[in-house]
Length: 174
Image (cartoon, rainbow, N blue to C red; front, side, top):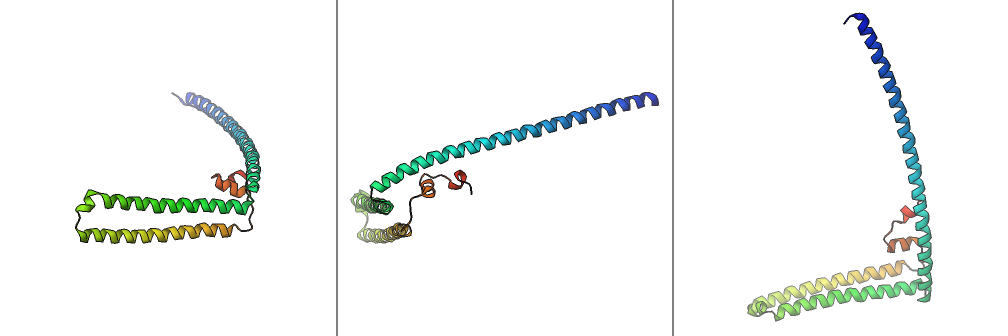
């Protein structure tokens, strides 16, 4: 190859390179435009989703408020709810451990233990009962604190979202 052929080939390659760069720029601009369309479309979808969620939550809130008002108001509703939780907690703790203790006492393995080992086991169970009772008292105090903290509050959208395990800030951005 001589210089003339090399120069011609160089010009052709330079033209091809310029065309490829131009095509690359056009493709990048097209991708950018498509991306912006997707972003706009996504924003519209998010807004539509939020609107639907807001309407549904408003409906659920209104229905819930009607039921709460029939029960005597928010304070009465919370008191009944806390009483139910207290009963459930007491039942789970008391009957569960009592059943276990009874089963162990009546088992053949327990009867085969020496009297010293049986008394030791009884002592361990008494300690466990005291610990469970202490935990029960702490849980009951927590429930009472929730009741006291809610004094004067109204049932609102934020609490509804909490009870439904929804992210309030996701639906109602600040």
